[in-house]
Length: 387
Image (cartoon, rainbow, N blue to C red; front, side):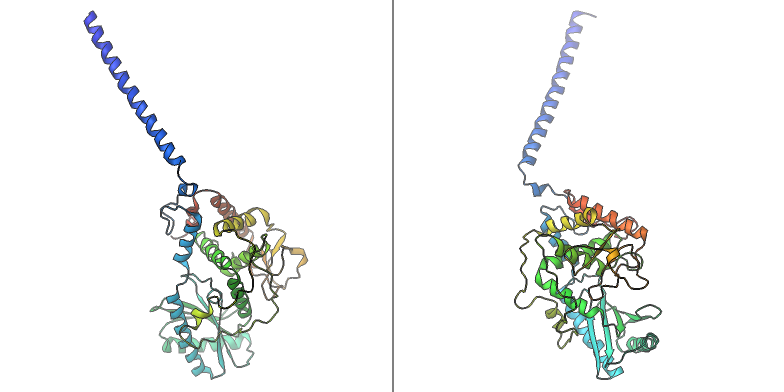
């Protein structure tokens, strides 16, 4: 090759090397610029929530995100007004059917302010002072289901062969779903007590709604062989009583609470009754935020609480031992959660070993998520769970 050709080839090589060096320098400068921008962002701006999570647009603050989740899933005031009207109508039909001494009572999450958009309404009625046996209740509810189907024009399904016979009601016009039983007075004082706790500190209600929504999206809210929403509410109550300083005090569960029967005398009575009124009877010294408390909630049940040996109780400042509780007959003890009004009843008696393992794994996952920046992952539906 001639000297002229060699010089030309050398110049091309040098030119190409120079271009590659310029490109590397530009990329390095871009990375440095990005690093400067990222390092100057507030820590909360670094949070990211996946698009698959309900309401999970890009999230800049954990507390703001959790507040949006609550707002999206909690039962709205407009629905409470519809429920109030539905219950008044139902009460009128019951009085016409069974006489003027018939009283209607509500219990469950709607009463203590923790209802979500997919919550069922829990209702029970009594006819005077009648104390009916199980077979009498079944016959009465079977008869009533036919009456309600005609008078309320709603779907009625009588489920009679169970411990608490009931009628499942569904009003397609208002999307109200209700479980109607008779003579089932035991849950009413519990609902009133939880309502009182909700009025003491709003963080209890907020945590209960978030945990209820989380347990449903993760597929661990099932009263048949796991834990139902009431159990998870008691888990939140126990946590709020044991954390230091406590969010909530320990009230006397055996002390009668005024107004065990919820009397709906106007179209907005339920709306007013489910909200805080009057002077607050308790002020917690705990000033932790909602996200801080939710993180500690998951850590407590993922690491600190001994599911194999301890009992969740709303009447003690620390867990009880399973061996120290005198349980009633046929009370499974894989997970033990004392009922608020009947300490010998285990609210989680249906849970089996495989259910405990699944629940604990979800608490461990929740603890991991709350310690990351991917808070939106908390509410991603589990595999096999419909979104």
